[in-house]
Image (tube, rainbow, N blue to C red; front, side, top):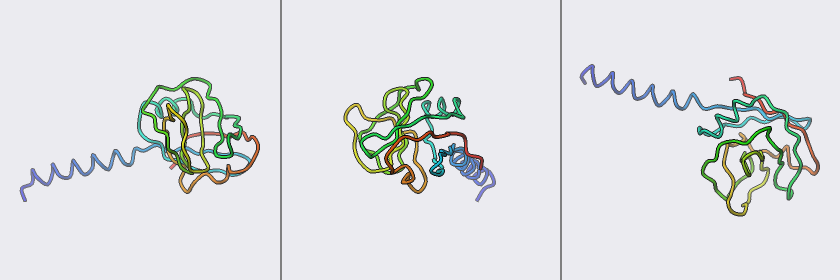
Length: 138
């Protein structure tokens, strides 16, 4: 195999690894425990990362999610209706949501921000909670 082909293949491999390794992770903690979540890569999550760290008072909604307001709106992105335990989303431009059950929301849907590793069952309890959202050190 020519050296040039090996170099090109190596550059492509390292380039794809860099994209994977660059995925951002956040930590969401409360008096109930903490979880980490991998964020998708888009303008919405980049803007969220620029706001961190944040403390967000959250309330329970429909016994499926904890919701709270961000200090400012985030850029719009594609929306979807389905979510699962561990989905982190955005309802409206400034409404941060952590889903601890599977389900669907009505139109226009939610902007998916990322996914909690191992699910978000620690939030599956009635009542309000204040969460701290910050970048996760790797």
